[in-house]
Structures are given as structure tokens and as C-alpha cells.
Amino acid sequence: MMEQIFIHRAVTLFPNAAVRKLLLMLMFLLVFWVIYFSSKDHTKVGTVSFFRISEKVTVTLNVHHDQCKTWVNMGVEIMKNFTSIKVLPCNKSKNIETKCQLGMKTPFPSGYTMEKRWIAAFCKQIELNESKNINNCLKRKLIYLMGDSTLRQWIYYLQKVVKTLKYFDLHGAGAFETHMLLDAERHTLIQWKKHSHPIVTKSRYSVKVDNYIPREIDRIAGDSDTVIVITIGQHFRPFPINLFARRAINIQKAIERLFLRSPETKVILKTENTRDMSQNAEIFSDFHGYIQNLIIRDIFVDLNVGIIDAWDMTIAYDTNNIHPPDHVIRNQINMFLNYIC
Image (cartoon, rainbow, N blue to C red):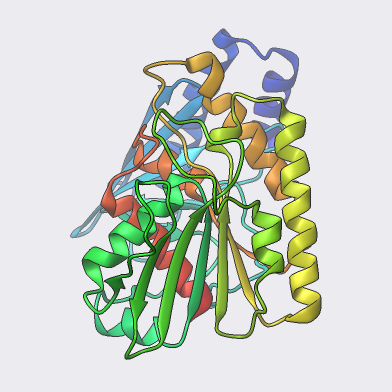
């Protein structure tokens, strides 16, 4: 308790680079101390290493306990108000009995990675198989993906791993045209459609079927087998924050209208992910993305929706890529399937 008070006061009173370095050292000592004294045999301890990347901190725990050796990566955000973190001995972690479901509040941080697998800190996940289990989960589902290219990655991934899903040609052209996958035998439809202005790209695209996400939501009747996934953020970073906030509020109102006519419809928000800063750092910086992430959480806090925390995931995986690799997409989709099945 005293350590938490000290850290909190240090960050509040002296928010500069020197104090942040001191804070990291203190965090190292605290985590090491907890690991050391949580074990009955004090020779079975873990090591902790910190890596600071811009304003993000990656914490790697290398835990040794009997025959168990575990590597865990966590995305850590230094918040104004600290909460305690319990580190338990290997093979003695607390079992989470509550299944992942819509409406759950996701904490900071929301999970961690272990051997390329994302493990949520607030609900019990089921690892779904890339063939039979996923097919059963997707049966009779109408899934509408609305947002940017980080959500379009789901279409590409699902087409590769679920062989029964076939691409349907909607006579469009280019990466920003509407994409659709169909499984006629299981009556499954998955569609991705980009959000409307702003779209920041060097590629050409048609605006003939362009529409804003709130209007797309208003056109969906909805039922218990209808799922909507939404992500916005990356293309909004160069613009004034009020544009993003206004769009998010309009989406929130459209979801409220959807729930009035079809309360059983499932809605899931995928937060935006971190990205590389090789160019245009001032315009596309993760600083803007972090503010937008907080706004999204505030606006949708009272809605019965699921959250896929792509922000924490990409921090923990340290991908530094606007389009993260397949193992990250796989874990996003697994979290999604846990919400809807």
C-alpha cells in the first residue's frame, strides 16, 4: 500500500522523464518482491524485465517454478490511479469461471500474451478450433464488419483458415470495396465494408456505395444470429478530435436504436491498434489513438456491447504495425468468437 502511494505521488507531483525511470525501477522491485515472497520455496522465483517503447512499457516475466517455465508479455499503461496487481506462483493462478460475454467491463490492462496466445484477465476463454468448432460457431450467423482495414484483415484471415467460407464477387474493385464471404450450406454470411469519410489512402476507391456506419446499422433488422463488429480510429487521427467524438456518438445512438428494435442483436467494438511511427509521426501518432481509445470507452460504457482490446493486444505483442501479423488477428477473432458462441 505504501509503495502504491509513493508511486502515485511521484507520478502526480513529478511527471518528468527522470521520475518515470525511477518509477520503472520501483515497479521492477515491487514485482520481483511479490514473486519472491509468493513462493513457499524462496529459491523458485521469477525475473522481470522492462522495455520502454515511446510512452508504452513492455513487461516480460520469466517465471521458474519446479518444472514450469513461462514467458508472459503484458502491455502496461501508467495510469493516474494505480490498482494492485497480484502475481501468483506458477500453476497456482486463480481460475476465472465467468465466460466471456457481452457487456463485460474490460480493465486496464485487459490481458496478456503467453506463447503467442492472448489471455483475457477478466473472463474465461475457450480456444476455438480452426475448422469444426469455428464452423459450428458461425452457423446461421450474419456478421457485418464495419470499419477500417484493420478489421478487413479478419475477412482475409477467415478465408484462409475456414475452407467452407467462399469469397463472393460483389463486382467491386480494390482493397476498399465491400468484401463478402459465404458458406451456403451453413447459411453463414460475413461482410466487411469500410467506414465513410475520412479515409486516408493513396489508393483509388469508389464512393458509389459509400455510407456512414450509423446509416449501415439503421438498415440492419437484427436478430439473435446477427452480429455487428465496429472499429474506427486510424483514419481519424490526423483530424480534429471533435470529428471522431461526433462520429462515435452517432454510432452509439444508432446502436441504441438497433437495441430498441432488436435487443438480442450482438454488437462488438474492436478498439484501434498501435502502429509504426516510421513516417508522419505527428499526424498518425499513437498519442492520438490513445485519446480516441479513451473516448470510445467513455461513449459506449453503458451499452451492452463486447470489447476486443486490440490496443492492449498490439502493445503486448509489440507489433508496431498498423496491420498486425496473423497470430494477432487470430487472437482477436478468437475473442470475438468467445463473445458470440
